[in-house]
Length: 522
Image 1 (tube, rainbow, N blue to C red):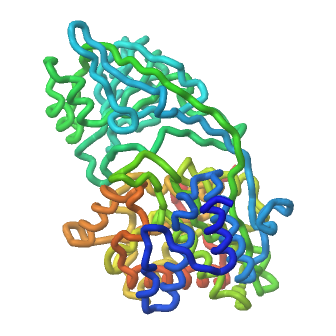
Image 2: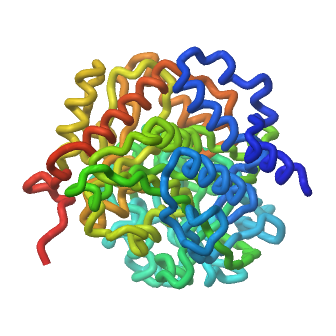
Image 3: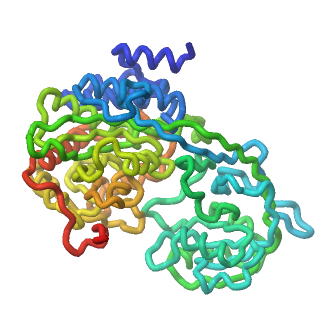
């Protein structure tokens, strides 16, 4: 039995095991019993024994069995597949992966009369993995600004280089990909926006992988390489030419007009693609309701169990433990279940630890398409993700706050706790569509999620921005990171009360009349 299996067996036997980064365990110093118990779950699920809980990995399976055992111990009923491991709490589904291996993958810019400019894969340049990625790429490059439809004339057979903006009013990534493919481009190379500080681009990438539900439609532009380029690499690419990379980046960051021009040289690449198929696992359980009329309805509470697993090292660490993203909030689901052992609410509560969130909300999509309770009976989804308890909790951003009655309910619960609810102040980040409530909302089910808010220009904002710069999707999101445990406990109490209020209300949540997200009548 390997070290990870031994540690997982100890955990299942009730022995608390922390990762190498958590000795001594921080939970020992937390005074509030509920917060202490919550963080002990985080210490278990993000210990090195779980190996970052990558979707479909042995570490994820070990973590899923632990969550299933905790759900069972809390008295929740299984709501997965009856014949799977985990006592019926596991819902499994098939996934397909394409991975661009670092070994055997190379990038360089070749120019007449000059030494090739070699680009470091995952550190300066990356590529979207697809089944149909060609083995090689060799093409002339043309810069086409934001790559709107009018920018892409005469791009046939070339590698189109675009400013990778996420700003409102300019082409989105999907529009750039669709436009470049329609124009007959050989490939698309998107240059980082260094001035988009709301969520800055960072290197290295953990890896270049695409994971999809097996049998689902192929991703956009399957035969055209879609690549990402770092700022320093872009500057090196234009060095010695008549074009000022700094001026181009500054103009793009200010949404100014960007002129088209041909980039000297050819981009040449080799891609080593590995494909495989395996199984992914959600953990799903139900707290049956007590009200004879309402127990056939279900309030869904969700968080994602998967992380990134092993990836490109950052500061010498290659294990992406994913403590706040999102294992700690699977812990919140477990603590909610613990609190309601023998204390059912009026409605039934579906508790789901989804997988594949980091690969495209896969587990949530699978569950919504293959629900283990009647989909029409699911009244709402309250999702836990994107939460960073780094400073005192005084403000909460609620996604889609004005689109459903969940916003009104949350405001009332928050007000009693001296928390102010606000709408998303940074819609350019598209956080609404990046977490597991979104597949529910796409299916017409009211849903929402929360983010710790702050007053701009304060220490709270500094800590929030620092987290995204240093820890987001990095190994540094681990058990040693700075935390405000008082704020974490306060949020958990808010979430417990919100879930209880929704589950016990006479009326189910509703869409706000006029909401652009509300389902349209057939």
